[in-house]
Image (tube, rainbow, N blue to C red; front, top):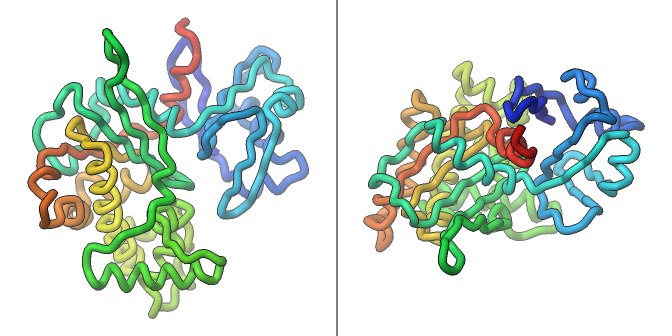
Length: 320
């Protein structure tokens, strides 16, 4: 879990604490949030807590299945147990969407594909990579005075698609894992999210002994940074698959306004110094075919802000 104090409208230092083990404790989520409040020096009774979750929020009951652990809670009951002034739960992509104007204005972006200059008024897409995977579109809507309308999706559940024979073999190996879990479709988030990266790593390196590497998203990022060959292969496979997923999102929205990628994995795998990964991303994003000229016009960039989700959450607070 990542958290930060917001004071006077400004986002403070971002803290990061492991979540899965804490949720298994008797006090679970309550203990985790209380620990966060203590760390940033906030008094519960004087504090409003905003919590983002990777599901659509439509009621006061949050039922969140996770790859490692499942947990659910009633918002009113959790607020009472925490003793906080107010507890608000929002979808994480909604929070990310609120950060978009701040991210663009501050130029917290690293270009991946230049395209044409961003066309004002055309749809935009932002892809969020966390434990899950999703995409949020922005379109102009309304009568008279137009305004930007966020369009939330469950795009992470779209089936993963190959652009060449080797990639199809990779997806077929991933499918074996899904079949063992009673499913047939390999969803995009099964390989491209932080929760799915370990399965992608095993599928990419199916013929190797992987016992020497911590097979978690964080462990694979560290291993790739240190030059570990299998981890680098996984990073490259992720970049190509993500390029194709981004292509599908851009086509679906007609995103001539631009496409952004946010999260730890895009920041690590598509950074300015990751020349080969960026080439592989663009190879899939601009795959030859009827849409290649159309796609070439779409600018793509990686969000470099350390935590745009928390930045977006801070905008829910009233102006000081």
